[in-house]
Length: 209
Image 1 (cartoon, helix red, strand yellow):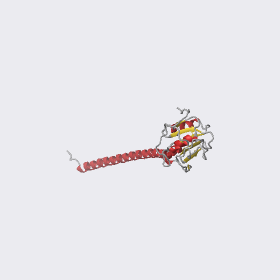
Image 2 (cartoon, one colour; image 1 turned 90 degrees about the horizontal axis):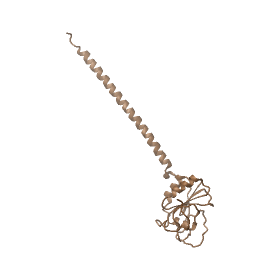
Image 3 (cartoon, rainbow, N blue to C red; image 1 turned 180 degrees about the vertical axis):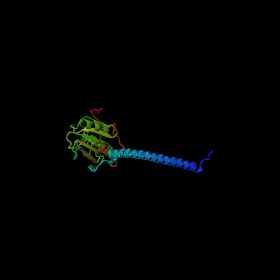
Image 4 (cartoon, rainbow, N blue to C red; image 1 turned 120 degrees about the vertical axis):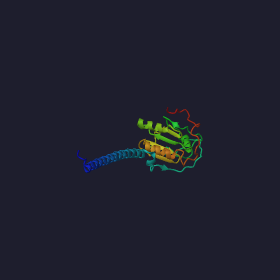
């Protein structure tokens, strides 16, 4: 019987080992490529989401259009008052504040200015504002220290007002409005921070449901 060729056997074993090693290396490269591609996809998705959130965040809204005014607080007048700004942003006002809420009718300005003194934000709009924008204002007004009402004689379609600060807008821009509310509701210019916006007066006007 012929003796086995040990050299040939060793060569075959070496070739098999080399092939197995090459296959293992290829599998590792494929795994790295798959995980790398998945990581890139996840990073792109996360990046897109973060970009969208930041783009729509009130924190990135431009509030450079806010006009600021200085008025003395705690000046009560029982008679009608003629204000310089429309809507008014501060000044003398009625001793009774107006209850915060959303209203379908125009409100007595002397009372609402007192609510501004307590830290409320007042969103007013021209009656011709499209219904979907009015609905957005209504949603924004469904919170504490918020008043929403129409105002026929204001110059801009939508105006956001706090004590001493005002932003006029051509549309009910949600991003800008939320930024204004976050910045100025119970904000640093509030003369009577934390004072009530309920338990005042609302006359016979009914809040919008």
